[in-house]
Length: 372
Image (spheres, rainbow, N blue to C red):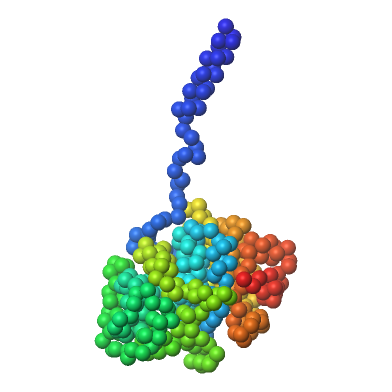
């Protein structure tokens, strides 16, 4: 009788296990989105942002001519589908195209950088391909017989030979502001609209020859032009920029169309933006896989603020592959005489080194980094 009872109990348990819900089969409460509604996008731009700060450059384009050298290693180390954080203008798009994140945040102290990225958001939406994108960016008609699959060097050389047209600029400016207004569901703040127009006018005036400008309008001859940056290569001579080939451009365009490139006004060492991004990512079971800092850490050390940045980074959800991209100016050597060298570093390893007292200066951060 006891044996029969044990068999019945065992059968009951087996039937319960078969019919009971399987915990790991249940859907997660939240996950990284495949698309954000327009209202969600603008809410994130506003809610994650801090008050804007000052920097002595407009940074309309980068001045890091070796920024593509890390792309092959970055693509090897970082799995797609993570979360990207970066700073500055459109060099971020090259790293986004290479690391293929689910979501990208561009956090910068300057509200002017928000204007740059809102302009780019509109240009991606208005342009079917790289030709239309560059036409609107420079205010120049698409040259006749310019092939859609042309190299980026061919594209830029063709546009350099076209006279800028006020009518093309005016049409683009109007279309950009109208697109952003419609997307936002409300007029832009006048200062933001003026900032976006300033960025567009700068590209219209200089075209592919636009260069980085230091504070006070001082231009160094050693700063690379927009054309030079877009035609740069990795260490093997391969062009890796987001404009180098149509598929890379379309990858960024798709992310922009789904409202998943989110510009934020934020200080890396500030009390809000980076931590708020981390909470948003963590709530959706995401992982920050890439953090592009440029050389912001140099200024944070100068302001005795790097440890606050380190504390902010420590709040981010990361894994063993999470990687910093940083730039070293003037003090790191590289063949060819470039002022800027791009480096990679492990985020968890740096946090561990900082926690154990091995990171005391900016030079310690640079020594902790590696060449690609």
